[in-house]
Image (tube, rainbow, N blue to C red; front, side, top):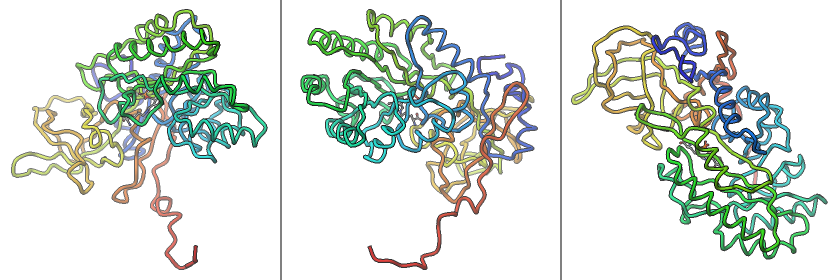
Length: 422
Ligand code: LLP
């Protein structure tokens, strides 16, 4: 068994569940997640952080399915949320508010008020305007908010441009220079306790250097603040740990990541927060899909699947590589395909020139490493209902999202009979 619970010889079993039988029962496309693989990842990270006063706040955006959040809650994790919807999901799954942090550049007044209401642990504040909004709303609610300033360390995370967040040209965080002014004016805040630092430089990071650099800059600022009489009670190091999408990806080991944190933040005795998303769930997910037909084009052969960019947007959005393998393990000659979905645009392509065992209509395939930013980014584009999701756990499975019905997809769309004036 590999770390993902995948049997090395035959790919037909995932967390002890026969994938062909599962697809037969639940249909395709189907997102399947291994609970064992998720627990393994949680354990690995917790082990690596041993001895540190650290709270792992799972980034809900990676996969906000309730059952997944319940796994996180059961393991004692908190949540990193970016919307009122994610806050409700986290609470619903039993994650206590004191383990919830709130990130994002566009928190609305309603969202801030709602988060204050339930008493979340901390706001990761991304602009002065937001800081003032929190102050105002906390004052109205006669409460005190706890806040961390999100530092934009101007570090290149060496990842895809669309998921890099730590350069000064990105919309995220504020410069250390600006943050310095916030702390200098801290006394004027009556309802916000500004005593935390936050940094998140991007996602799918495969090299330690950007993390080290960002943490060093944050640490230097923490030292400076301490000298200036502004004690820092918490440092949130964000998420971003990369995973293995293809064979030659070499993810950072949890111990090495933790060692880098230990080293950069040596002497820090406040709360340490982490916000991993992808690392905990990506490799624990596969997307099961059937071949609808093979289309022999003029220049290439198209393998047309019943999954599409609406089920898994990463290849079309980021040109992301995902392994695609047949579920049945039989020897077949290799063929080169463009692997596509049925959606009516050329971007609906999972892979170009991909070597695969020769396929036939009806074959079951799995697209790997889809547990993060798969279902959570799904849409109903082309009026394709949301796919089903199943959680597998040591030989058993539970449906954790039933396949969307047409009526559910169109609910909330009355015909325009009742006209009003605004
Ligand atoms: N914390 C903050 C403030 C974030 O913005 C993110 C991700 C995370 C934590 C979690 O990052 P992770 O550990 O998962 O790398 N849809 C893209 C990824 C977008 C990530 C957005 N922010 C993809 O499919 O690659």
